[in-house]
Structure formats: structure tokens, C-alpha cells
Image 1 (spheres, rainbow, N blue to C red):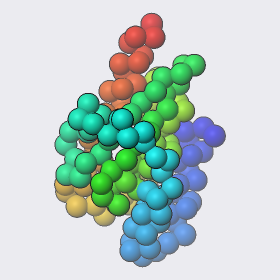
Image 2 (image 1 turned 90 degrees about the vertical axis):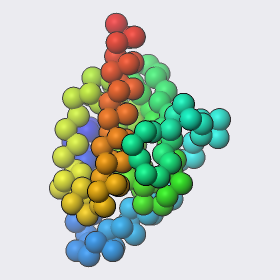
Image 3 (image 1 turned 45 degrees about the vertical axis):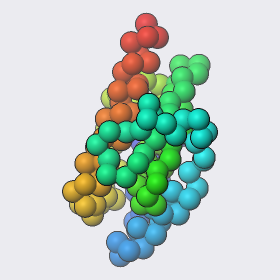
Image 4 (image 1 turned 30 degrees about the vertical axis):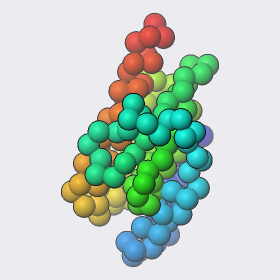
Length: 140
């Protein structure tokens, strides 16, 4: 699926619920479905700075695209990072760098997070884009 198709499917999934408690439950379920990160990557080198909760993010670059694995010690944060992994994993560095992650606002995520979680979300996106920039620079 394209970046747009994945984001649109997430928007459709969240649109099934009117109540934000139901949307939080969907987010928690998405976090439960997040593939496990190898424990060797749950170290300081892969910890995202700027998140209230602990969030580990590990990139792997293969055949021109980046795959991410991630984990968090908080269930809602784990759901948030699961969404980002779903959208950005398997993309080229150029796609990740240029990605307009419009789904975040369309599902109301940014507006319904506490300020600290919202800052964490921005930190996760920034880190994924930084990894993409690094791989983009070394691939040339």
C-alpha cells in the first residue's frame, strides 16, 4: 500500500468510533499488535529523547527501504508508535523524509493527547525522519 493508502485506512478505522475512549482502546489494541522489538535494541542508543514514557525505536535499512521495530513501556504510547511504524516502515528514506503525516490530525490524535504525549509524538516522528536522513546520506 502507498503512504496515502495506509494513512487513509487508519483514518477510516478511527472514524468507526465517535467517543475518544473507544479510540484510545483502538490505539491500545494497535499497540498490543506491534511486533516485538529484539531485546538487544531496548538500550539507551535506541531510546527516543523527548518522550515522557520510554520508547525504543530501531531502524533497519535493506534493499533501499527502512523497516522499524519499536516498543514502549506505556500502553497508549506503544499504540502511537505502532501507528507510526505501520505508516513509515517499509518506505524509502526519501518517502519518510517527505511524508506528510496528515492522519495524525485527521483522527484527532494530536488534539486528544496530553501536552507531554504530544511532544513525545513529535519526538517519534522526528527520530524516524532523522534515521531516514542518515540512511539517505549514506546511500548516496
